[in-house]
Image (cartoon, rainbow, N blue to C red; front, side):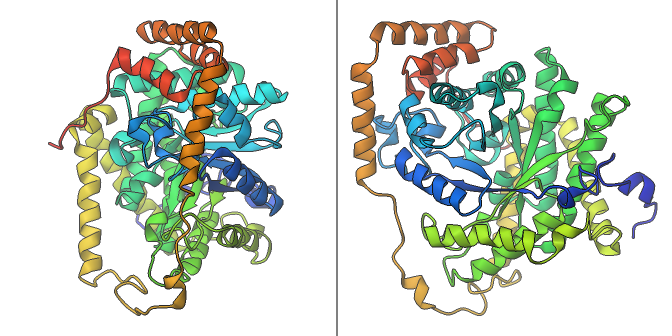
Length: 513
């Protein structure tokens, strides 16, 4: 245990500041984590079948993966979308696609997470409009829209607009959901994608929390009520290979976020809202650790990573399919991934005790070390002028690239052992199985549906709605009402995004320096 460790100050009690031991007093003894399997493939009908399959097998939340054209604001018939339609997720161009995606699923009785950022406003508007058409009570919709655009500039590259305009879209969602979707989480601040790009556990915590702080600052600048907004923030972390480091990482992130809100925003000091700094987070097992070689080994990796998330106190969890390094997961592997969570929840007893590793010398020492090192990163970001300035300079990106390079060098040199890759190698029969790729006819059929929609929609209503998007983009008003009107007029994702591109331009990535 580190010198100066104070159990009362640093641990406290479950459900109480600084939330090291979890955000609920009873944790999983009161309610299990949400088993939310991330899925989206080909067209809306194929994805809808997978969602119903997962729900029938015990999943209690949906998580939507969108294809790359949808993520960066291009319709399926755009030349920029060629060859990518439905490949990395489901293709969604219009309100009719969104209706087909959730056909037969009551949206006001299920929680839905949507991994979408640059076009988050458009996809959230499509979701709300489709729910309204289905007869669902829009005010009762529950779920999360990722809406974490800063990490796109850092790690994924699925951005469109200059950062300052993109932040305006983020805060527009904050304000709109606060008024019309009170049960909705308007952001999921993602350390996961930075970890997948090569960040260390410490960097994942530090950079995710720095992004969260930047969103709070942007909200304050936009005149939003932080005490009302902050409790709706959620986070998203990877569950990686180093088991105890991951458990400690989740505990450190909670504690550091609670302390950050109290010290920098005065949150949680008033007795009327003592839980304001409670960090809720989703976790996903680490896709970057899955191997093509001996893919059955991934079953063990996923189970151990999932266990670290559970012992770390996650609120929801996705477990990867063992075959995802090869292609889109099969039904068999998707079911096995879900069964892994169910076995953890119901068979091995880990849900019977709140924070069962609390007090372990090793875990508490690791938790303190990660918090301390992440705090140093936050101080360095402050010295650079804040997270937006650090991103614009390329500093955050370079830190992750350096960490990724060092890790790969260690793997190549055999210093970091990867079973089945640089040690204990072999050629199991399953490696010869052909990968399951998206149906090549799906892109053509999606384009045909899109063109048919354009031919039958009301051109006057469509044009007027898009013009209002342009007007709002030029002003300082909230864009969500205009975007909602546009999607209801059957304007497409690409058409709406293009109106904002025309006003704001596109972001140009700077080299690190």
